[in-house]
Every structure is written in structure tokens, then in C-alpha cells.
Image (tube, rainbow, N blue to C red):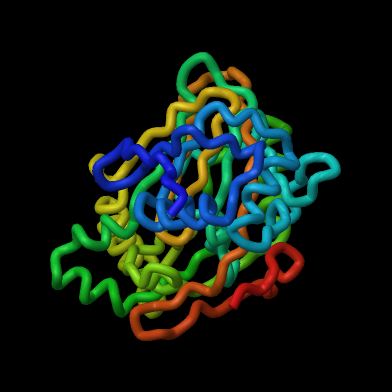
Length: 296
């Protein structure tokens, strides 16, 4: 054990890692403790790190191989093919989602690094889908265990009415993916069960769109209960690491026309596995091998 200082910031999700200088390099023992804390708290906040691109990439790579910036060709930071700019002038993720669940092997975890923040608003909400699963009545848990959902990037996401945002959206939809994932995912490290839905989940396999929407909306309400959510109030230089296998996040569009910029680096993940041991399967698109390496 490294004696890492972990301080909870929410009863069900979130902790701050105190006294760590990521840029100075972290020992294997510290990384192991960070990973253990990630499994427990789902989202970790590292204040005042002020990393450069190389520092963020080096830190993220300690948890596994990295993905490219985005599966559909959204441009990366110049010269950094694994770094995705999150620019409020291009796109605002004003919806609950889990990163890139429309591919068969979504990222294991994501790192977000704050560069420019507005004077108000611009926070990020992160929700614990494992806690949401535990909140379900037993009968609803048993029902959810049997369900599979089709996720797609063509899911009617909110958009900005600007030329730059329209171009971003065209690239985002330039290649359409559809993948069936279990509605209840078994975590590959902890064995914990969690809901695995979000706004990319369009329909339930075998059900009509209206039936699917009713079920997904009902389950989503458990995810976004206030007790299952933390709000990260950013300061430039902060870094957040969150488990993409059992969380959702949301970037409210509440900062008017102020600039907001974060950089995202994601760690490659495996194919989700349901309660019955079955893996996710592709319906439309490719295996996204251009975006993410295969992880056993």
C-alpha cells in the first residue's frame, strides 16, 4: 500500500486524491492504489495538476493501452492523435452518456483535463450506475438482468446552431455504429453489476421503440437520482479520472457563450459482459480497430 490520501466528496460516488503530483511520476504502488480507489469511488479528482499533453497521456497509459481520439474521425489535438479536444464552441455534451458505447469495446476509463473554464457554469456531472442498479426493486433488477440495448452514435443528440457545430455533427455521424450491449453489465475487475445505458442507448432488443423508451427512461431516472451524482466544479489544471464501465456523465450547457476547453484521453476497454456471460455484439459498423486496441 502506498498510503494514498483519498477523501470522499460524495456518499455514493467521487473522491479527491490529495497530495499527488502526477507530473513527477507515480510509483506502481500508487497507481495500484489509484486503480483500487477508482473501482470503489468510480470518479477521482486530482486538483491543480497543470499537466501538458504528454503528462496526461503518460498518466492515462498507466492504466492500459490508449484509444485514438474518437471512433468516427472527430479531429484530435494537432500532433496528438490520442487527445480529443472538448471545445464548447464545437459541441456541448448536454446529455447523460457513457463515452463511445456505440462501439463494441467502449473505453475502460476516461481522463479529462481542464484547460479553459468559464467564469460560471461549465461543471461536469458524473453518475454511479452501479448504485442505480442496487436502488432498483428486486423485481426490476431481475427484469433488467435479461435486457439488451442497442447503442448508436446516431441517437439524436442535442446540437448547437453554429457552422462549427454542424461540421462537428457531420463528422460525428460520418460512420454509423450500432452495438447491442447488456443493460446490466458485470464489471470485469470488481464483478459488480451496474446499469449500462445512457443517451446512446436507443432501443431494447426485441421491443418496439415506444416500449424501449419507456423502459430506458424508467431505468435512467435511477441513474440520475441526486444521491447517485457528483458535480465536478472545475479549475484550470484539474484532472478527473472516471470509470467508463459503470458511470455516466453530463456537461450542462449553462455557460452562455464563454469559452470552455478540456482535453480527453481514454483508456481502451473490453467488450461488456452481461449477467448471463454473453458479450456485446456488433449490429452495424466495423470493429473500431482503427480507434481502440483489442483488450482481453
